[in-house]
Length: 445
Image (cartoon, rainbow, N blue to C red; front, side, top):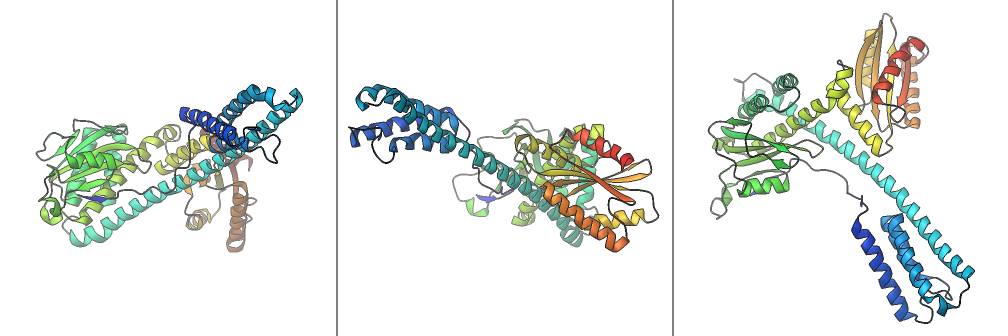
């Protein structure tokens, strides 16, 4: 049995959520340290008379590893044992309080350090995951284009339809089906796999969460019921990647009634379904076919997710492109959990003879990571720019570059003549309010 990676997610999961076991670990570790101190230094187990109070390593370690609450619990345990031994130490009440206060303050300082770096790590992780999701979506779209224009049109001359055209038809159908995976949509996607991957018998099983449903919503050819105990299906669900049987496994005892199992996941790791292939021509049973199928399934899953996520914004702004609405919503969700830098900029092209040419040239020099939406309002063309990972300093540099470009090439003072701009950071207000403010700002420019 061989695996084909459908997706590789970048980054390391650093986030350690506070849980019950961290409290238990804090108590146990503190008790162990106290016992060791009692054995190693019985006359002064709290190291009051020594140059350094080694017993405070327990709360410091807990605060650095898990934060304030486990560190505080460790301090409380030490304080309880300290109270039991206070008669033997000979410290006054004031000295005892100062000793405990010093340890408590050190623990708070370490907990603040933990919180600060935890936020920074979460922020960096969100940056990495967002960039990785976009890179994966871009690579799938690029590979789909390569398949359509290089391979298919060269070898399948009798099939003039392009892959992008087929996906466009699926998207139109998705819009007409209330942006849900319906039997009709699933049947059309299986037909697409049959067209480009020569699949003969296959089934489309929807999924809720990571649980695959037992009833197929669409089939191609004469299929059999899904057997969850089948080794191919079981391993595909566990490893979350496309699996197929190779000729080298035919002599083994473990066999499968299926040839291919393709989990349908979007770039965020969300399951949408499972494609099970039972029959495919021998000449098409190649590694390249499996790669193409994995790309098509992933591209379809991303298209469905993007269309569904963009729906709330498109209800209020019907002309907004799917990609713009999807990225807007995704960035706003990240903004709610992590203070990520993202900016919404509006460039207003006022009426003039060269306006269309200016817009076309500007679209060629814009940053590749930005998303655009062009709107016409009262004879003014507004180009909205959604700019991920753009803090205030980066935005000022971008504005300076545009000012230099407009001035040197067209003799236009950017922001003062017939090309004006305004912007907001996503942390300032709700997305809908930001768009409406920038639309209304064209009258104030």
